[in-house]
Image (cartoon, rainbow, N blue to C red; front, top):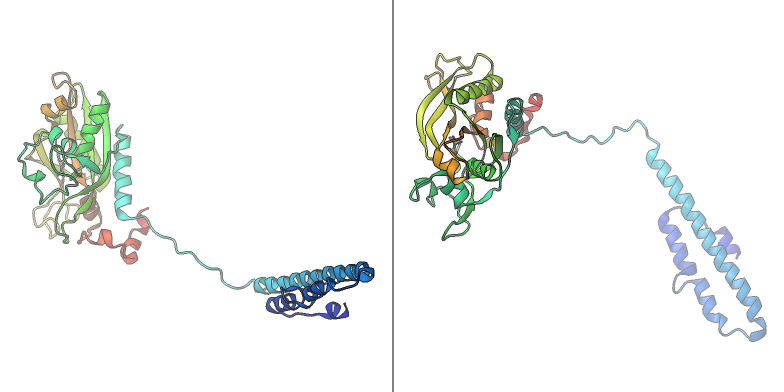
Length: 332
Ligand code: DAH
């Protein structure tokens, strides 16, 4: 008993050693309990009581020592209040996210709602309903990542125009949506091309929507995005899902249209494809082309971000090098 009273320990390890020595499976007190069996009946009561007292005392002592050590160890850890804290590094938003949000917020002001569709699509929504002829080269294995083969194969969408179809299938005009998303093309990765990139699709369908409405909406957008002196130019083009179709250029925001190495001396930069929704597409989605008309446009988010910040190499967007990402800190 006296030995228990006097026991001391300087660390958690020593307390544990003491516990094992006294109360462990082969500990001194445990062994006394084994001997209890051999004690004669007349002494059993007295011996038993003493033994229990001893065990309680030892348990108390160990708990007390543990408490004391715990306290002094934790107080040690918190004494130096002047120690510098652990700083968490803050990240920055990715330029693609910043651009995506900016495009959405400009079109939201023009009354466009957000629409999304699946990245894993079928041939019908990516090509057929969009009036692609069966042998169109965009369906080719070289462009499209196919997941299944056969009739109406499953594939990774090559453009966000598929969301136009899904939106028109589910809604009746007036429809005004902006559809951002990831797209996939089977292309070799270089400074100017990647197999994964981002697009934003726009669609407006109602009674009496005209080419002039499209031109004005795009002009409003580019002025918000690239500055109020930006001009646009439309070149005739071809897309299966629009008629007429156009490619839209903006006046070069670097040289103001005089010609520089960014615009290759032309003064113009291509930013999107657009056009009046082909009557065949409206019909495929159950909308009467005699009653309704609409326009659509599609642009690459990487391209818009490249033009806005003069990013020279597309691969930078995907490498997540913090030195590159940091450059967009102030753009949030
Ligand atoms: N889907 C086209 C592409 O990926 C872009 C595009 C062009 C979308 C014209 C449109 C459009 O909605 O009208 O190249």
